[in-house]
Length: 479
Image 1 (cartoon, helix red, strand yellow):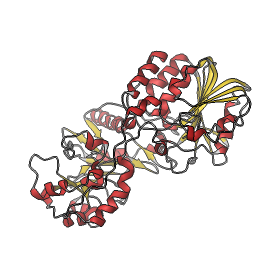
Image 2 (cartoon, one colour):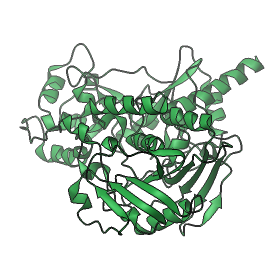
Image 3 (cartoon, one colour):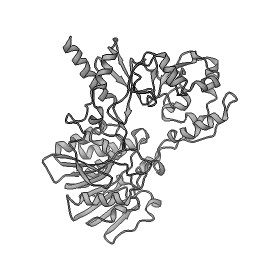
Image 4 (spheres, helix red, strand yellow):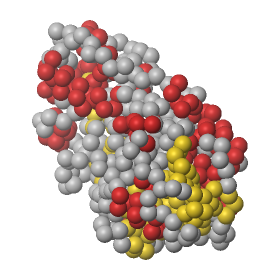
């Protein structure tokens, strides 16, 4: 991401405080200390200017590439607007008559070196009144919708919707707000060129924006980076260029190799069938893994369960990952669960804090959890903080993330609950587990999804629904 952040109105939100808390004697201080370090990253809410959470400086070589690609559409450019300009590094290397950079954080723009035809404005990008720019550029912040605070979110969405005549989905990422702002700020034949996640070309949360662009018949060119360009950021990035001056509605896709050489792609996905569609539930359906609040508190290893004195009646088997499970394991039997989860030290027990009756030992465990451990969005939005909604037991378990071909699929004979990035497959009737598993393993999912990161691929819940619906239709036709 660029040196940019949320708009000034978002400062109304309040940072969730981090307090040390008092450890009960029922807890092992060292053990909870280990939990604290890794959990602290996820529990703080992203506020208006929590800069470290949403900003990564754009590498100089990426800026040079950006201008080389943008220059193929317009050269020279007239007026250019850079949303979230940071130190205005996009002001260097481009061919334009006038550059205006908007940056909310004076600390980020303090080192800016501007050419004579460039201007820096320290303000919120969404309050900028300028219009009719020849091009809108930048590398906006990537912030998940959970962390975009009210009332800034509602005000900004309403403004964008009124200007474009679209209805945005409330679960879209912040970078889409900036992309839409670019469409608003450029004139009717303008150019919008931004470094944004490649996922926007297929994710349902971005569908209103894609539909709007298609309806206008603007040309879109997307260059996908094959390698990570931002340190510490897994998201697959792209240079996306929307040409409002073209009207044949053509979408073109390219890859950028490690030397930034441009390589043509077949489409958004590698397969000729394209990206797997997103469908609603059918006879069988997928359900994302449970999100109890934080796995560090709600899921335990066998050693931790014994350490805290919790009985088997206080917990239920769960699966938080299938990464370490060999591909040869197709059925998660009690023996396989013991071998690959319990004895292997995996987080395999979900505490039953959702139950109506909680044992004194489990209640003592929950009471001793320090406040900063439960300082998560989920815990803040359930009453009491530990009473999460239990999901039904899935018939099959699917690893949503994978690196090649397709996700792992196991038949759930042990009756484990799916947690986190493990999806569950459900049905009101008993499914032909082995046939369904064989069907899913026969699909090259890797070629039909958009890469989540450099090597990591991910199948979404509604995409899995599409595969399940296809299987059901095959079975129905055969019968």
